[in-house]
Structures are given as structure tokens and as C-alpha cells.
Image (cartoon, helix red, strand yellow):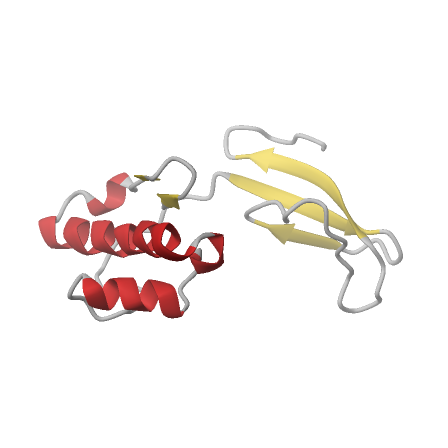
Length: 125
């Protein structure tokens, strides 16, 4: 992960077993920092500014890697509930705040119902 505010990069321990995986991942994340440094927050994605930064670093601008790696275990399960029909929607992350979300099937508003961390059995929001 590239952390734009601090200009740092966070790495998963799952890529540290191979120097080439480490190199490619570091350069990918560095390209994010470079793009944001050059063009501001609007460049905080895999768009044209990031692609240009990847090219400047001598890499093909590929969004996803193609090397084998074990997946991280999910740290939490976030559940939202529809105010209209009561359906529950499960996600790995919370939705961004200060926005309104609706259930695609009935149009009812969604509200945070619970956050279950990997070590917890349940934790209502």
C-alpha cells in the first residue's frame, strides 16, 4: 500500500520471500507516490498519471501482478443492512463515510450493522 499523506509504503510479509516480488511491488507502490507527488490527489489511482510514473520507472504499467502469492487472511467482516427489505450485505471493508448507499435490489438505504474482527465472534457497530 502507498500511504500518500506520509509518503510511505506498507508491504505484506507474504511478498518478502522473493527479491523480484519485493522489487516489483515496491516499484508499483512507489509509482503511486510519484504520481501523487507530481499531480496531486487526483493521481491516487491506476490512471494515466500512475501509468506514466510506471513507464518512467522502466516498468510496464500493469495493475495486477502475475506472481504466485498466498492471500492475506481477512481481518474483518463488515455487515450492512438494508433499511427497506432487511437484506444483509457482507464486505471485507467499511464503505467510505459521508456518502449514501442504497441496496441495488430494492433501493433502500444501507446502514452499518456489525463489524466482526478475525479474533472476535461478533461486534455490533
